[in-house]
Length: 285
Image 1 (spheres, rainbow, N blue to C red):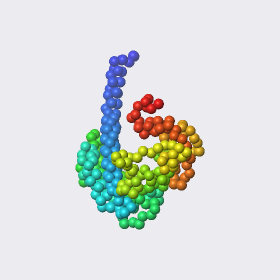
Image 2: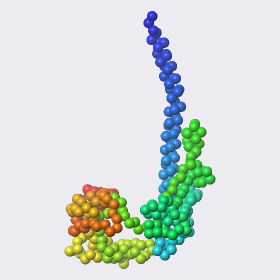
Image 3: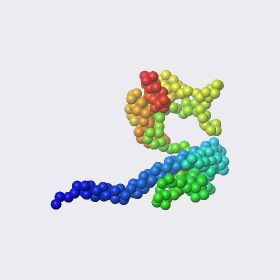
């Protein structure tokens, strides 16, 4: 006896319907999870930006007072004021937690060292800012959209930032521009005695402009020179690559570097490309 084709098709359609009914809740759940996780991640980024901005605002106060006395109270107040200027999840921030103290630049001592503490040479005056959307903080936890089907209606989200004032003893790869100046040139063009320190200006209030040249053409206090940093190499291509990519290795205080003589005017074009990407590059050549 031959099977009925029409009956077989009906059974197949019934199996597909059953399979769809079983997998649909799983698919909807995964879609809900993806949407809500993306939203939570976005709010987390907003909170991180808020914390970064507040910590930097407070550190600026410390920067202006470092060397005389650290005005911890004013720095914390400035950080709190900066928190209120920002938003997260479409709502204005109301509060945050600001701690002041010292930060070990080598991280031998982990975390912020709360006041009062006796700083070492490795310690920098710093602020730590923590902002969150949680129960009782900044309008409560972040509300979810679809994961309520799993009885997850909200989630707390937080972010922390630390900012301090220090003169680093080392600069990691990518962080050094290949241009060297003498100490007398530094003193001539940079006013380190003002608060905050900044470039010296001419009679019209414009910042002084550094020359690029060689010692045989200019006095040591009148121009700087290109440097291949730790690499014993020369040529425009070497300097151009360092302008584009920065130092390939970590550089520390007292490390020897190699100075390149000459203007190497082509390097100025690479400087414009690296620092001013909005300039039409076709016009630079």
